[in-house]
Image 1 (cartoon, helix red, strand yellow):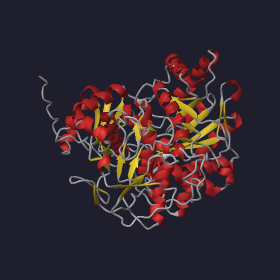
Image 2 (cartoon, one colour):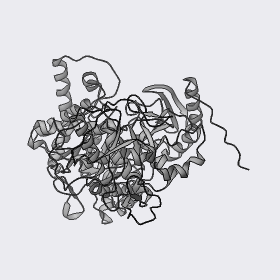
Image 3 (cartoon, one colour):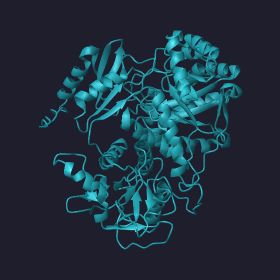
Image 4 (cartoon, helix red, strand yellow):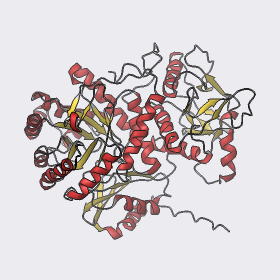
Length: 617
C-alpha cells in the first residue's frame, strides 16, 4: 500500500470536490485543486446566540472559512437555527459545522440548519463503556446492521438537504466493538470511519470528508497515511477529501509545535484539504497559525526536481526508529542505538548559552556542530562510506528541501547496506528565506559555520518554530534521526529550547511536564485557559509526567488514555480526576480540584518538590 506516489516529490493528492454551502455566496468548495481551507471552533455555550454570532464574526474577520459549533443536545442543535439566521442577517455566509457526539437526535435536528454535520463513529451509535467482549462474525454483522439503522437517517437527510458530513474518528474515542477487534490503533480508527463511509455510499451519498485526529502527532500521521492508502485500495472513486488536525495540542509553543509536526508532515506529502490547529487559546489565534503553516509548505517541499527513487526507507504505517549503532559524539555524549536523540548546536549558539547553563539543567547543548567528526553528504550524488560508526548529515547547499534530502540520504544508506547515525538539520540554506544564506570568501563571516560557509539570516521566531517543527518533526515521525540541529531560529537560547520542545512533542524525549489540553468549546465545563495556567503553575516542574486537561467527558477518558493523570469536567463546577483512563475521584469542587490533583500525583509517587530558586541580589 502507498499513501503517496513518492516521498521525494510533492504532488497534492487529487480528491473529489465537496460543496459546502453556496460557493457563490460565502460557501466553499474543498478538494480538487482548491486551496486548503482553514477552520476553527467556537468556545462559548451554543445556547448563547449573541456570543456565538460574535465569536463567529471574529473568526471570519481573521480568515476562518468554516466555523464549527458544538451541539451536545437537541436543544443546542435547535438553537443553531437562530445562530445561522442572525449570521445571515448580518451578511455572514460562512459555512457552519455542527459537532455531534453521542446524540443522533441532535444530528437530525442540526442537519436542518447547518451546512455540515460532524459525527464521531466511535460514539454516534455507541456509548463508551470500555467493555471487553469478543464478537463472532455473526454478532459483528449484527452490530454493523444496528449502526446502519442509526446512521442512515442522517445520511438521507443530508442528501435531501444538500448538506455535507464529516466522518471524524478520534484516537481513544473508538467504540468498544472496534476496540475489541482492532484495538486503539490507527487501523481501528480507519476501519471505524470506513464502516460509516460504506453506509453513506450505499445510499449514493458522497458529499463527505474524513478526519483522523490524535493528540499524538506520530499516531495522527500514521492514521492519515493508512486512511489514504486504504481509500486508494478501495477504488478510484474513494478519493474523498480529508480534514487534518492534532487534537488537544495544548497552548503556546507546545501546541504550535505539535500541530506543525502532525499537520505539516501530511501537507508536505500532499495530503489535506481542510485544517484546524486546536489550541487552548482564543480561537482567532488558531487561524493565524493555520495561515502561517500553509505559507511554509511550498518552501519546505520539492515540487521541481523529479527523483527516480520512489521507495521508502521506512514503513510509513508503523513507526519504528531507524536502526543505527551507538557512537560517541564527544567525551560526554553518545548517540544512535538506544541512546536519546541528541541536541547539537552551532559554535555561535554554544558561546551564547554555555555561560548560563547550570549542572542540573535538562535543556543544554550536547555537542557543537563545528567540533563533530561528521561526513557531510550530497545525497543526489553517488557516495561511498566505509563503516556504520561514522556520523552523517546532508551537506549544506544541496538543491533539495531538507525533508526530501534527508529521506533520500536515509534511502541511499539503506541501499548501501549502511546504518550510520544521522544528524538532522532544520534547513540547508539552499533558498532565500530558509534561515541561511551563503557567505562570500572575503566577508567577515561573523557567525558563519566554518565548515559550510553559510551564515544565519534571522527568521521571525514564529516562522522559525513552524519550519523547524515541520522539517525535523516529519523526519522523526519517519523514524529518521539520531541528533538534531536547529539553525533557523536566530536566538541562541530560543533555538536550544526549540530543539528540545520538538523532541518532546514528537515523543522522542521528555525533559518537562507534558500537557494534553483540549481547546474550549460549548461543552466545556470550566475555563480551560485559566485552569490550564493554574495546573501548570503547580506541576510544570514534574519532568516526564503527562497530564491531560479536558473540558468535558467527550474528550475525556478515551482521548487522554496516554496521560498519567487526567483533570476532566464532570459537571458544572465539578471535576473528575483520572489515573490513565480510570476515574479515581468524582465531583470534586473546582476550587479544590487542582490541589486534589497534586495529592493524586503524590499518592502515585510521581511528585517531587519544585526546586527553590535562589533570590537574585
